[in-house]
Structures are given as structure tokens and as C-alpha cells.
Image (cartoon, rainbow, N blue to C red; front, side):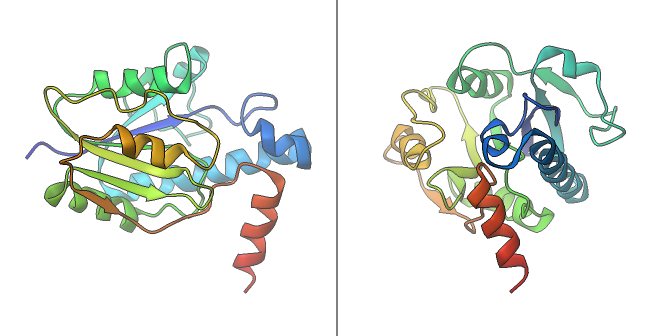
Length: 201
């Protein structure tokens, strides 16, 4: 079987660009700090997983950046392209060869190399895998790409409680599905406060 390809969809942790919903509650400076924190944790986990990784970055000027090594210069990088999240994720899967493909973002600080390897093993025995987020979205989605695969991201209600269910509804009914551990995304101020409170328990 072809090696699993991991596509990381990310933005530079800059004011007004990343974590804009978080900035509405915590301020732009703190939101930028949290964006860098979650990005750095995600990248450490991916690098220690030993998987094949490609960075899908936005905006296009980020393609030449390394963020002080947070985005290692040796990693292949691609533009997310223009348009909606549906169109940008669709570009990622269109760019990928047939075989197992994983999509992750940088909003869930508890992503680990162990969980990523679990997702890889899941695609060895099932057709698709989700890492659910506790807000109804997902911190990971993976699929065994094959000829004739339908559009997986059409009509998805992003940034809300239906995102995972909408993507799952686009999968062929015959697909076998694996669910991984549910993690917390950090999108808004209450998410950040709840994540910190949970860490103190």
C-alpha cells in the first residue's frame, strides 16, 4: 500500500490572519500567541510521527516562510489556493495520488504522533477515518483516495456543529469508517479557558 500522505492546512500565526474568532474574545495579541502555540505543538507531533507531510499554506506569501523553523524548509509546501474551505480542501485531495490521505489543521493542541499513527492504521483496514472535535467538527479526516471518489467537501457547514456529519454524509454508503479520540479545538475564548481548566485537573 502507498504510504499515507499528511496534508497540514495552516496559516502563519499573525494578527488578523489566524485565530480571528479567538481574537474577538481574548484580543489579537493573545490570539496570535495561542495560534503559534497550537501550530508549534501540531508540527512537533507530525514530525515525530515519521509520516510523509506536505504543508498547504495560506496566503501565498507564506510559502516562502519557515517561522523560525516551525515550518521546516525541507517539507514540501503548496498553496491552498483561493476560494472557500470546500474548494481549498478539494484542491488538496485533487493534488494527492491515489492511496491514503490525511487532512489536519492546527486548532487542536492535543494532536499527538500516537493518534496520527492510529489514523494511518485505521486506513489500512477501513475506507475513512475521523478525529472528531468536541464542537461537531473534526481535527483529522482521512480517506483512501481512489478513482471515482465523490466530492467529499461539498455542502459542508463549516465552523459549526454539523461539519463532521456533513463530510460523513458525502462518503459512499459502502465505506467503512473509523472514529478516533475526540479532541478539543481552540476556536473561541471559552474553548481556550476550558482547555486550560481541563489541564489543571
